[in-house]
Length: 138
Image (cartoon, rainbow, N blue to C red; front, side, top):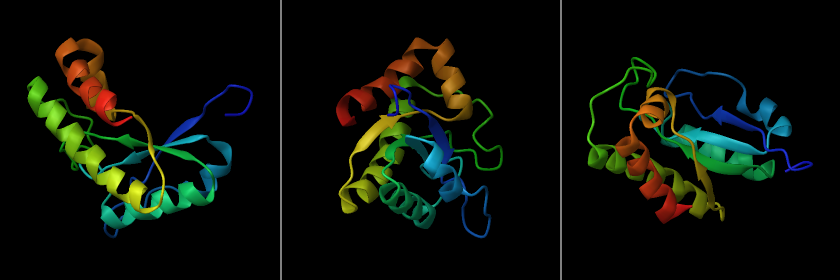
């Protein structure tokens, strides 16, 4: 962090043939990358490429789990139980952690994406499901 300020940016949201944004161009200006984990956006190649770029740029990496809603980019709410939320955050964060560990990095944080973030703000059980994974893995 520069002067105690942390600047994070959502990254790794491309997938397959679809390219979105220029993550590497943003990296000199941020301290933390929130890397999409495959449900709302991203794929294994993009996740790994983003992790490697973050490593080259000295940026901390956190998971950016979203709802399983690529068509709506994770911005449409779903009715989920606490256990379902916990499982989907664990699954996505675990995938990102595999790339981080392979690159000799550690998970910095978890920052829910889109509708999942909004749901957690309004529903304590959803927030608790996310926090459970944060306590176990960060």
